[in-house]
Length: 118
Image (cartoon, rainbow, N blue to C red; front, side, top):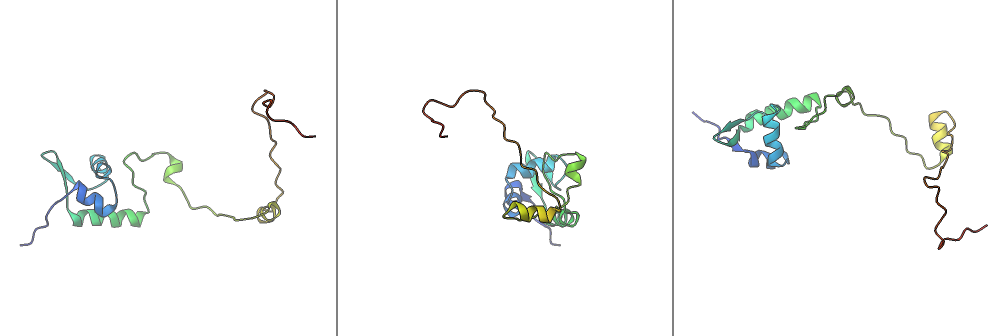
């Protein structure tokens, strides 16, 4: 009978490229399969691999402090447009772009060391 040796949070963290504290927090949150025995967190590689495959299949981002907002759960990749000039961007968007109005944040006059050139 072959039994699997349990791994520590440090070992799982190294294989998942996560900090061991993150591994522990995910375990405490019930997001990562593992058990706490005598103050130590222990994991079985086969369970963690199964969990990881399930996460990849669901395309889920795992965080110990995961947001529960609808926007965070329904993120979809957006289209990206790379343009070097405004006219290319206008063409891609099919509309004209209004220039942003620049307003001064300060009503103070410029420092005396700066001279305005007219």
